[in-house]
Image (cartoon, rainbow, N blue to C red; front, side, top):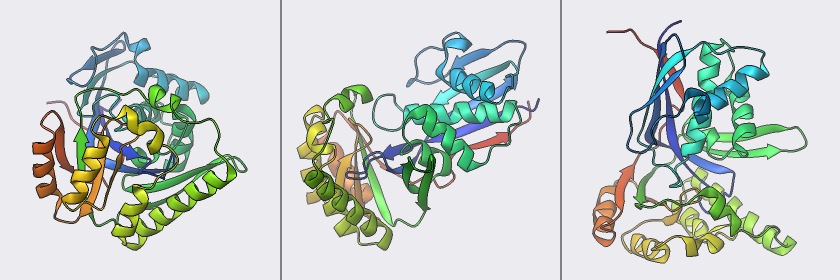
Length: 302
């Protein structure tokens, strides 16, 4: 077996009204260094991850084992060194990155030769929705739809967004389950129509380059942000101050509590500097879109 490294980017999802469908890969990463070994061992090297459990209890191993079993294959024992600069429960797709890493681990060890579309189908099945796993797999900005009629995940992807991204990461967690509990179980036809229209116009604005329009639509979401805003300290302050500093629009990243601004190209550093003063307890940084997505590369032992 060749030694190999799996790299999976973080992601932001929803982007306001793109609820459970729009996402973007970010330049923070989960990395697995995989070596042949006589037994399964996971070793964690990151402040963002808890100490490694027994291999069979590790989430990434469990995903890999589930996928291998679907193909009647067995995982060869390995030592896996796990590194990550993606904080947990912050709305940056940490779970989706782990799911994608587990799929790629099985793909490599079992020589499954899965293409990206098949990986996306499995990742969506394991994660429950495609908005984070799709950008983690493909990179770039991606809009997805899991269609019940065909049982396939349809998607549109682009690398062409000309914006700066400013991320506001607080020093506390918000579990996705908690953020989902505040959402209504149903929406009326009128509310759903209005919310879908806002989402459609936002996507059109982003794709066409009308970022001011897209920013207005981001901040007009009806699907989830009105319900989750109370769970996000400084929600209104961040949106207001970022807008004053020139951002097109600011939204909750994923389920939160991180937030993200879309801003004119070149303005990100100044906005981040100003917002860091406003939010001294946050990590405020300019992010880039990861355009490569998940990848596996072999390496030689020193």
